[in-house]
Image 1: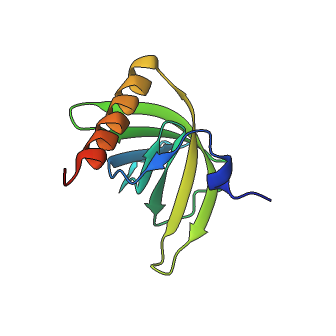
Image 2: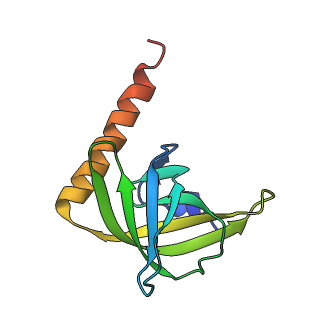
Length: 118
């Protein structure tokens, strides 16, 4: 069986963005966290509580001057030795302007990484 990283349709980068997370079925205040990695197809973030594989989420990713909003599904949860869960989600839908903002942020990060120390 292949690992999730090998099956991923788009690569992720170690980009840290503020992330607001809401369960679609909940009226609670959003959980605020920071992405550990980010790509066009999904992201990874820490959570103090278990969200549940298959749970549908509404995400707002702070990308600097704008936010990208998307719906997502939890695909993996891994407990860590720090007492938190490492949550991996796949993006399900986003408006075209949100997807464009996310793509722009990823391209900018790739550019900076390629030219670091040059």
